[in-house]
Image (tube, rainbow, N blue to C red):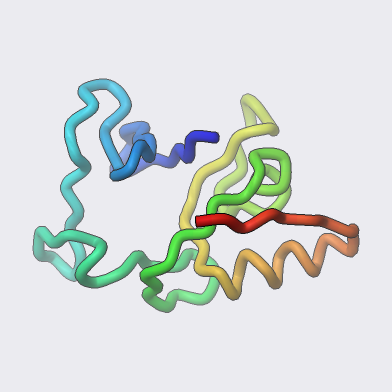
Length: 104
């Protein structure tokens, strides 16, 4: 499973680190106006607005139902960043039974 998202209109993919999809170069992150490594500061959740440092990789079909930015062209894909608390809350709000296998 590959995670995808968008940064400033460019598609990015996760392959052990976030890379720009078109060049496969590492993504440059600007946090609070400064270029930083998100592992040092964390990512900003688009659900609650808090910073988080732990990524949860969930199945694509579940992500399509809960992601903050829906893709109107292809409903199986969406983008955005959610912390673990917001991911679990949105999964709970689906009112469906889901089994998500978390592994390291």
